[in-house]
Image (cartoon, rainbow, N blue to C red; front, side, top):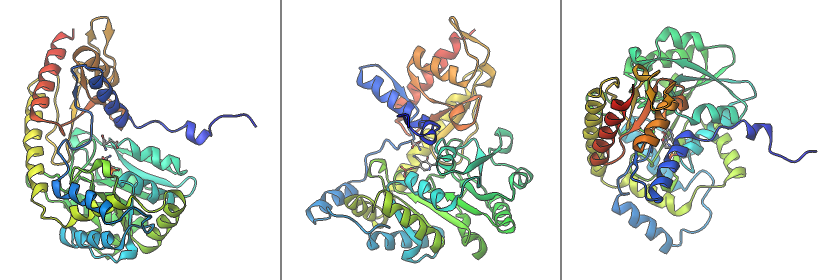
Length: 399
Ligand code: PMP
Ligand code: GLU
């Protein structure tokens, strides 16, 4: 047998979002004056009471293995959260806590997919979905949509993507990378489709608290018993409470799916980090006003970045209703030259932006969105303004 890695592992693309963020951090550490607009990570400090809970946990002796699906106390707090925020009722055996929502997603698809099962993913989509689906033997089926549809696929496009092998659909609202929020009518159409064709909806609601303007978050699971029985809701504390490093995410859904996820988790990773669960519990039960404070800051930043991008000749972006990203449309500048280099595609655009003016973005091809660069506004207003200034200066040099 020759040495070497498996075909399965060899086929996995590394996370482009994490790679770009690492690049920005490495450049900064090397003393370069970089503006990072790549990280999908709140820049706020974790709330003090949550930090205190983490410290307390150690002194309270919470240093041992946790139950595989998470502590009962935390699962009960998650149940309360679903009741309070989403009008959903679950029992503890319908909840599993994992090492971040990304791990929850991996567990869900591990539990649901047999070789060749299809998962419908509206694109542009977050980098990790297609890779996770492929890692467990599934086949991603993309439903593209663009600015014209506000990045929400039409009912006809959704229907056309369904096949006898469709096992699940990934719904991300608010969305990463495009920030769109699915209105209730679109959720109802999707719920109807899922019930008629009998497939699961994996509803990634990690950005539910980051909605601006008049849209309200609606969990598709709350639209009726039939869709509830087919939905696995994914959420976590990373984005809502600025707790990305704690690595706590969770899933809620049908008992047999959660049980399968729990079995997989028991063999692969065991229960999640015990003190971090105590901190996550504190986050869920503390007064929630800091969430609103952070949301308001994000809204101001969104307004500034949208205005700034649209004021630069050749660039544009939609005004997203949620999350903390904008998709900067660079198509009108493709084909231009930056010195000797021809800017052929969004990856070349992002590369040139980085080398010429040290602004880090994530090229749209990472999200199946050629012609765009994703900008994260989870950074200070000063960074946003300086980033915009540099992008404008860069664009002016293109001929
Ligand atoms: N889903 C989406 C859409 C995300 O953007 C992220 C951010 N990394 C995650 C899930 C995973 O979050 P985490 O693993 O930090 O809980
Ligand atoms: N979700 C964030 C992003 O898209 C964090 C990085 C990651 O996990 O992909 O940038």
